[in-house]
Image (tube, rainbow, N blue to C red; front, top):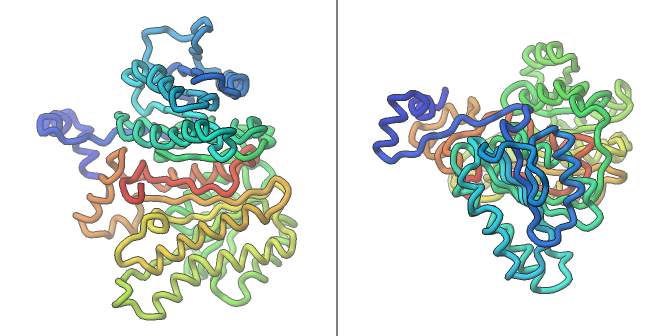
Length: 445
């Protein structure tokens, strides 16, 4: 079921009616990997340390770039498609005035589906209480700025640790592109440098990826996106989904594996399959999930155990088996699909929310356990337009769609693109992060 309100406001008469009533109109978001449709205005708040790195990445994107003090490469009267600020130099609260100086005028002319990316340091690395306060202030600033933007624009904060400047490339490219359409008001840590993919158009070339719950919905979108990025994708789902699974695998040039991940023998069977057919695994996406919604007073033990087995115990057991057999490559990527419910909680979902919060804990542990340049991260989708949300009661569905800064639900591809970014070889600097794909949902904010 499509978003009827967005369709209404995209029509001239509907747009006029909602404008007269003072109602918000959900913007058509820019999606895909196309470059931003306009120039980038970049700047430095204080004596930042990322200037050379940002210039290099922005130069590689061949975008018209304006940097104070430089000769402009874009026409001054054009709207800016992106605003990029290096705020790593903020050393005390007084320096925060530079945020107002940089954004006050340009933010008024930010193009539709524009991008704001602020780079800060890691507050814990600050050399004084004043610097730590200034750097932590960036989180409140970016979250508030994201709520002020219109036309599908987003704002995100990237915290770059010292000596980790070489790990920001893939993250900046992702945040500027349409791939990040539903990622808004997030704080993304860059903890170390990383080696970028040799072919950025196919960053997963010659890599093997496994996606659980891949027969439909978000899992199918993740499999398609990883395959488009060059990966050989192993699509895993229940035997009952066998026909759909095989059809998708054949279409993507991947392979299908029918397996109940809650079965006692599932970890061994999966590890054997990967070892025998591929020899290693480069990307592991824990996407399979189950819901059995009821209040805790009305929920039976079977409903609790079913959800916990699929959503949390199985990912733990499968990962342990693959790590014990040393099948995850040195540049391996583990990405767990958690949920906004695991962060904010949700009435009638104590089992589901507990399992999804548990996944975040699992990722946190794995981030310190995997070796080499391997990483473990989580994505937490908010309201995403799927068959499950289409079956929700009308009022609840509409509420879910509007309770975010972008005034609409996300698409499965939004989650898939975020997973694919975290799975890139060049994203090795992001480890142990939880990235919400929720359009800055007001829940749990």
